[in-house]
Image (cartoon, rainbow, N blue to C red; front, top):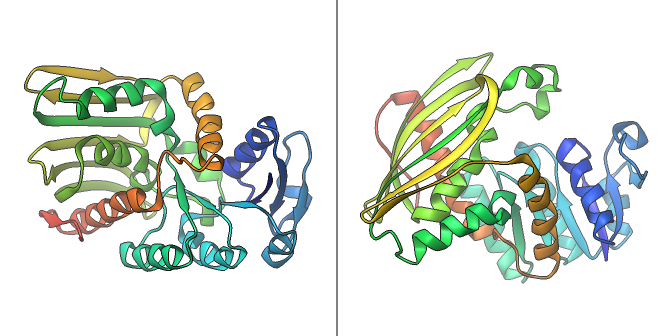
Length: 289
């Protein structure tokens, strides 16, 4: 299948290589041209989006900075092919909803890059939770910690704070527990970047979740714990499983069965928006419906 990857930062390069491993024809768009991609094998790179769309791809991946996802995605709707947009779908929930409505109107499927949904240990946990095996879910705790020091060296347009970077954890909580209702959050910032994010989320189901997002940690760790009336389930994180998940995610999307649709990812955009508003006031904030 002819696939076009827009943006060749680290995630765009990763997706390009994985798509080739899956046997697809891959070309890319990046204003830096060949200078931006050091992976192998080398792929053809268009400098402009117009040139990339003129290639008439059969599927498109948007891997540009989050602030540009919707602008680029909207231009790509003209191609009338399935779109895959890296996480988070967008920064503004209202704009995200407008975009998804237009995609629906044109019957263009939207998928979003939350590959942790493809990790089998996480899928087993989801099945355990949703099957009722541990009864009513009372609470959950999601944690992500790593050193953000390498982000200091990245171009400003590609830098994000720990809360946006860790939207995987928020997506996992929405996936497991359903629609979030309100949140209270706090964050420590440096140069307008959140280095530490903490909070409590209340879900419409009545469950509560806490999250601890730490960009100051000396070592990498990631985990999710679910507390039910009949038991507690915990899952950690292995990088090798995550590497496999990237390929599974792309394969499922191209087969027409994405792990995360645009509508599902909208829940996380709304939650991110509420967290950002709450961290400024230190009060409970309702998640936009």
